[in-house]
Amino acid sequence: MEGIAPLDNILGGGLPIGLYTQFKGEYSAGKSFLASKCVAHAQTLGKTTAYLDLEKSFDPRWQNTIGVNLDELIVVSPDTGEEAFDCLMALVDAGTDLIVLDSLAAVLPLRDYDPKNEAPVMGSQARLITWGLKRVQQHNK
Image 1 (cartoon, rainbow, N blue to C red):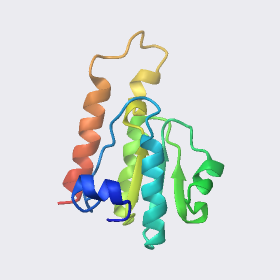
Image 2 (cartoon, rainbow, N blue to C red):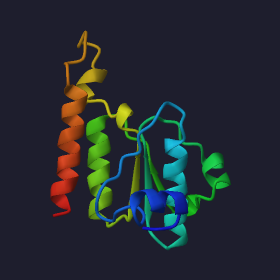
Image 3 (cartoon, rainbow, N blue to C red):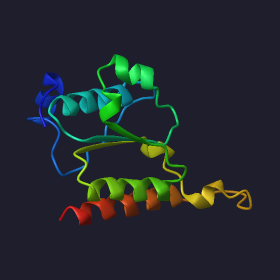
């Protein structure tokens, strides 16, 4: 999907359709802003869009200011990583064109929220993310 010239040049023609793209960068470098600009552009093309807000930082006023049509945006705030991937799969099944998962760093397994667990299990977040992304990838085949 083309529409943001510098990003299109870097990616060789825009975001790939049917695949996932991860924006990486330093804290507060503009990753969420860039993702929201992609949402705004996709909406101008008549695409269906969704925003999974795991960080619980979604600001409707800011989104509206940068061009996101809130009336055309599905916003979900899952509480756990498992819930996030369930929502993600439901959105994929519904044919949503562009889904933002903000952010992978906030994808925490349910067991990490359990006060009975004194310490998270090493690698549980990485395993959950790998499992969830494989689920999406296998679905798209």
